[in-house]
Amino acid sequence: MSGRAPGSLMEIYRSKFRSEIAVQFAYRGALAIWLLGLLLEPVIYLVVWTTVAASQGGAVGGFTAGEFAAYFAILMVVNQLTFTWHFHEMEWRIRQGFFSPLLLRPVHPVHNDIAENLTFKLLTFTAVVPAAIVLLVAFRASLQPSLVDVLAFIPALALAMVLRFLVEWTLALAAFWLTKVSAINQAYYVLMLFLSGQVAPLALLPPIVQTLASLLPFRWMVAFPVETLQGRLSPSEILTGIGAQIVWIMLAWGLLQVGWRAGVKRYSAVGA
Amino acid sequence: MRAVGLFWLSLRIGAMNALQYRADFFIQLAQSTIGLGTALAGVAIVFGQTDELGGWRRDELVALIGVFVMVGGLVGVVIRPSMERLMEGVRLGTLDFTLTKPVDAQLLVSVRQVDIWRLMDVALGAAILVFAIAQLGGRVGLAAAAAFAVMLLAGLAIVYSFLLVLATLAFWLVRIENILVIFASMYEAGRWPVGIYPAWLRVALTLLVPVAFAVTIPVESLIGRLEPTTLAGTILLAACFLVVSRWFWRLGLSRYTGASA
Image (cartoon, rainbow over all chains, first blue to last red; front, side, top):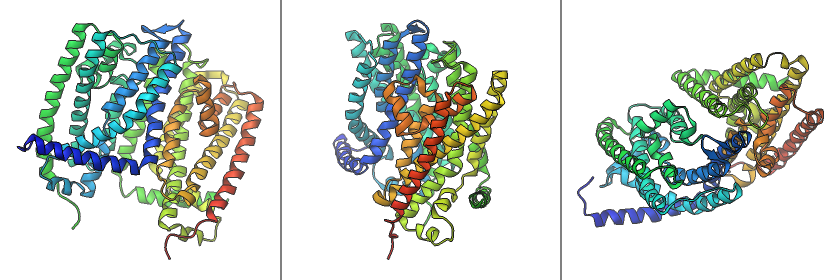
């Protein structure tokens, strides 16, 4: 974004990593409480769907209880790696005028947020993976991915991370125009809940919702990597998915540029 | 009587404060509607695949959603904002001003802050509940309705006591604004009957964080599924919770020294 040598950008990232780790360790309690919420949600839906599967003679919509367990355990990891918190942060920054110091720095503020995001995920990843393993074991998950599925999962997950970050960062820019983005934030969150496969695997939703989830970026941000690792997709479906991810990433990237330029013009710090 | 008067006063002050920001009404309306719609859509998706969930039928689960939203609203109207203000008061020392007032301090801190927009959740939840009861038809008699009212009150008393204990911890730990989030995240589990959860989680939702008493048990009493012993036990437990939380509050308060001077 800026015409800097890649080396100096790396350095900026490295120092941001160090300071972020220190910040996160200062808020251990908040981290633990956050983890509790992160673990509870997939467990709730996992329990609901295994109960349904049991009452329907062991399977529902092509999912057995063990496959539900695998789905929600992987979902938890994918969700942890892809989620962002920029909706709250951006509104707070803009309303309180905390954007000013970030704007004065010689790098685009998005780098600050990318570094923050990656550090936080690196830290919490060490807690989420054991939790996912406990889920897999405790709920007797059945998961036999082929080598192709595992290999395809890696780019699918990486692209999902990029896509969700770009989409949510771009939407958070709405705070430049609106003083309260909480209603938009909640509407987006609900769409995400249903269309990205967090309430139930998309295969269990009505066909029209499934189509909507595939046409919009939602499926490609969370559900797609999960389905890939579970071995539910054919090679051509995987390729189509990765193509959809790339197209949406380019679109979101363009929107971010336009929105950012227009937004910064509107920004005026409050106070002295 | 005093409690009701004080609560009414806070409600009026809260209303006057809130009415300065009228756009918030529409934001809260949007949020409450979205929240309720999400819960109902979740039920619709599940019952698209099955006729019953852990022995609960669709109408019964809709009633559960109604109570879930209603109780969440009641906690959000007064209990949660008051507890947040109490913890802030301990941290900043502004609790001094409360303690000098000539009323019981526990009573005052418990009703002092009101978020009137959350009444919308109470109204929407109640509307869904009434709708669900109409669907259930003749199954809800006068006795069941009375038992429901008693269980709802007992559940609220238990949740209030639990949150008061959490907030009182601020006297020892000072910086724990996040602690109430524990209840908020565990409460999410209450949108489904706790009976479907595995034993460890059921125990946690009953004893560790009393979500079961706030939502599942009142609804069970409404649809006539509650054992009389559970009913009596819940009343007894609510009384215990109230006594213990008051004792704990006094213990915490005796440690309060004010933040300045």
